[in-house]
Length: 120
Image 1 (spheres, rainbow, N blue to C red):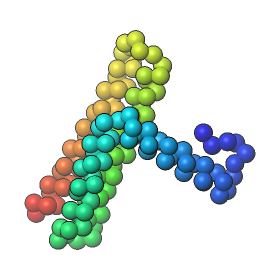
Image 2: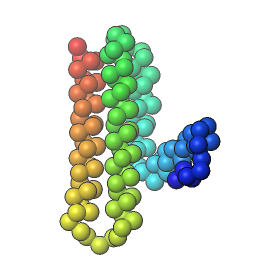
Image 3: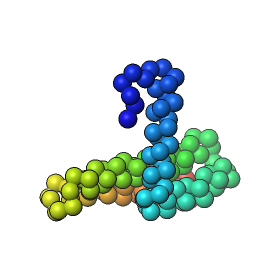
């Protein structure tokens, strides 16, 4: 958490450090994030190799980026729910299911973008 007294460049540097710490935690603890990152590492060069317009290339890259973003948010939701308690609660299960559904929609949209652009 950024300390209340930090302002300007120091606040930005601290916030960047926390962001990197979050990415490291995702890499260390989230298998789905590692798998999706691996797919992105393979597909990003492919996006630059394909003979597509700049806008299409941007759409391909944004589709990959949004998958990673949604996975990070889902992982954060799961971590908070798990922190609260391990006993089953309907709302905790719903929160996790909703996060998972967001990832599924994100993956489906990314697949649709990639298929539409590469097959047209």
